[in-house]
Length: 534
Image 1 (tube, helix red, strand yellow):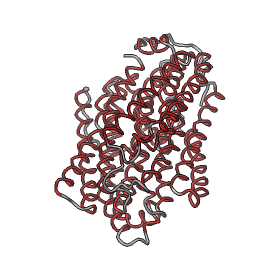
Image 2 (spheres, one colour; image 1 turned 90 degrees about the horizontal axis):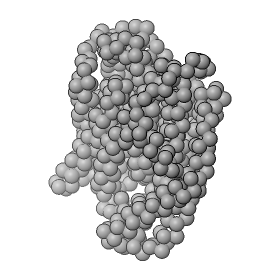
Image 3 (cartoon, one colour; image 1 turned 30 degrees about the vertical axis):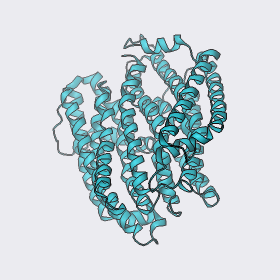
Image 4 (cartoon, one colour; image 1 turned 180 degrees about the vertical axis):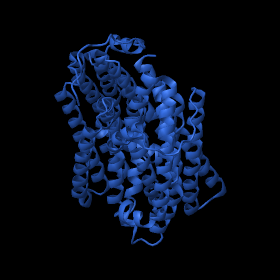
């Protein structure tokens, strides 16, 4: 299967999840708006979700996958099964202890870490603590599920792991639909959503568990024991967890700072949902597919293949995300108006704030996706420390910028801080890869990048004038069908203009696409010289 086809397999599942996520957020915005319950739920959900990215997806996609791939290459399926059972025993025991400790300390965690700004607001603090307590066990399900997903990705079975997250949105949409049908108040909606998150975690774990068994690996529980393989995993996992979850760390910091202003937390969450669509479809797909493929190439000594994988991934990433970034920057307000502006979501206050945040997130989108394309170049070489250092620097940049801008700009200032931190992190990752000789010079890629940027700028200018020309049809007084039709027509026309310009200027060509699509599992002959040590 070609690299692009593998990206498409993961992206299709992710796209389904993100599309359902749109539906979920539309219903949530109508039911809760940017009011106190929306703030409480989003802050409470941010906490277990951050831990999930830190200690589950980030750590296991970065540390577990290369080691699991090595076991498959060295000892076959039996060795991989033994390694997985060793990890499962330690992971489950650690998660259980962590969950109990966090549940007992939840009031302190919310007060001093998650949402310090809620502490003096009657009812809001207590609601946030209760919702976070209900949802935190979701971490156990998602961490074990991330391990199963890492196994499936290493075995090149991508779809089950990609489709499982969709069930979170399916269940939450069901909760919101039930609440709407029965006329539930905002408080009951918040509690229903929290129980729905926990139920979704159980369902998602069941899906990947069955898929792993179907792939021929049945995992049994082993008494927790610090074997050499587990020790190696832990050494790699801690820095990898921090690095892989850097976006979530920045979001958690942003949530804590934003809790000092009413509606800021939920405004950031609504904007985040929209920009997560291109970030998830492209960035997550690239990261999930590239890591095991790059690990296999490096373990077998195929350095030319590894360099080609990295360059083609960046090429694909920029080709797809630059137009998305341009569209989010120019069309943010019509997009927010179409997706959210109904029910409790106020047109005169909520829409402008969320739209400005979304536009800024759009400027950071290419950086967020490039980070996911660059970090496998370190993780596949079992170097998780360097990206962790860069992640720590970017967190410092984010905190300093957010604290500087929030008093004057409010929630959009936090978005600026996140975008700046993303670009700083991406630049450091690329610079070190080049310095170490782990990033081969690719003349076609260097020629295409400025042409792709030019194509995105041309599209953005055209959309800017088109938006003003059709301002009446995109305005708040326009019927929903008219707004949707006009917006989709403009976005479709902008995409067509981008692709025409990209192909016309040489930013893309059919030969490039044909090579990527046809590129199968053919392995480049091993290169005898060793790559430099990380």
